[in-house]
Image (cartoon, helix red, strand yellow):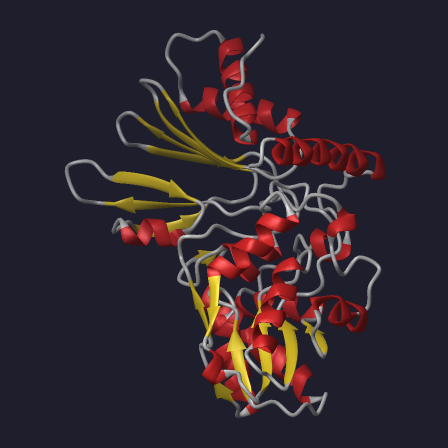
Length: 373
């Protein structure tokens, strides 16, 4: 079969494979068993991370999650008529907003099929050790979402608590704790509370600028930071400031923020990341490009601090990030932390594959720069 792909979304490729598997069955009326068999065929061919939702015309809604459960997927039920309604989303907050109840996670390797009569069919086809992505709790998910039974807000508060304990050992003279909005707010509040320090929202966010770490060029990222954040100088002048952010990726954003705070007259600028240092590219769906772009690649926290212009950089420990999630859901014992430690849970990411992915990403990056995207 030859199929034309209309987007750069990898899920479109997965859905095309699913459609091909259905076509090979050559049945007139699809049954749940046919759906399960087709998804099993997808699992045989596709490696990596994927959470897929699709509609089979005239038959029903299908959803499935990769066997390692790296990325989240949940569904909810709403009894508001003669027949129940179902919805599927990557974050539970979407289901809450639409008043869906009976919310459950779709398990790793599980298929969900809601037929045209609104009957729910589900089956777990493959069982692999569950490795949810740690960066979901660090950055991507909304604080009011639950990811695999773990509330994102509660996790970030715990991360703030653990990081505060490490900061307290450094005997720093800190006047004020300032979050880099928005994701760092929950951890920063807990750090300030644990260290008995003032907490101030001294960086005001413009909500109409996109995520800076996935922008194609350094210039666009640095310009975007200035447009995205505006400091309140009176809260920073003559103070020793502890900035708290969710992570440090390339360092461009962090460097621009530190510079802004210094320009406001801060005496000292300390920078705390409530995630561990990012050192390896994500091959499971997040555009982090090449490992050479990570500021922490082959660099100590002291060297990172020098690069971004901070007086000191404090990172979360990876074991504490895992501990925070495990504490909130003891059933979660394995995690995908490949961007932190280079251990890719699918077991098939070789140095050669990484080189090929990085080569492709560089080409895309160069084309984006040429088009001034």
